[in-house]
Image (cartoon, rainbow, N blue to C red; front, side):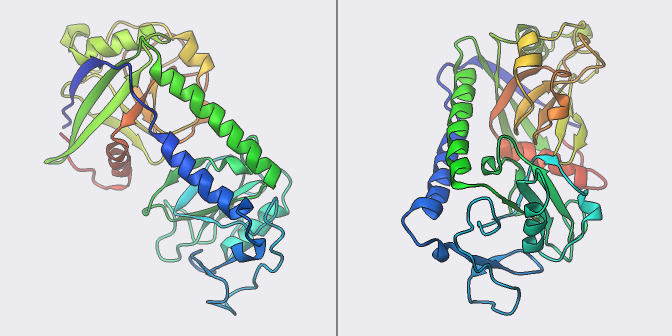
Length: 343
């Protein structure tokens, strides 16, 4: 049984949460590539079994070393992202049919596969990775290039090891693209008509905390008006979010919820801007749930990973701006059998 306590307030000064993290990551990678060091100093070796990075020379004999330190652009040799799962369209064989022994082998498979600029390798022999087997190597293509390093998930509970192939030119191009993307997202969050809302969430008998949202009221008025009505339990037959629950949770995909009586509000039309101008390209977006065009009633999902197949089918009308850990805690319930009661 889930209970949501929700409150609405105006917000004109919310700042993006990703900018500082992005700048820190950018500085780290830029130092690796252009910091004036000999590129041979950047070489790493990786444990065959787990994909754990160690300084070169510490485990000689475990695997062949990457000897050509100049091949840091567009070739294998860049440091891997441990505990990360990169997004991207699958190219070549599906991972379940592409079992390899190490992240290095997976990288070289990407290098040899047309269109591949990123890869994801399962290096956990004991537990696998999110239901996948040790050794699965998924070859992917990120747009516009591998230096975007778009992630589906990351954190110590993520057992995947990911890597990317890109040239120095592509790296700097990607930084420019990321800056543009973040500026567009910042402007979207800061629009004067936007409103702020929050849910207080408990799992079992434990209060987990608050998820805060920015709702795109200026661009998606149909959805935001419905959301605000349901916050006040002003839906059909006094339906609303209070007393509701997340009834559909899919690992690394969505946390879906809706009004407690499921009726919501009278069906309303899609908002064209949120349907066609916004993309399901990152964690934390609020996406309508419906049964076809213009059949929205107030049910929605919190997207936890890029999901481009949802584009133009479901309206995006807001985003999570605080409480990301709560969103992930809810999503983790998909792995818990039986699922605990949630208040």
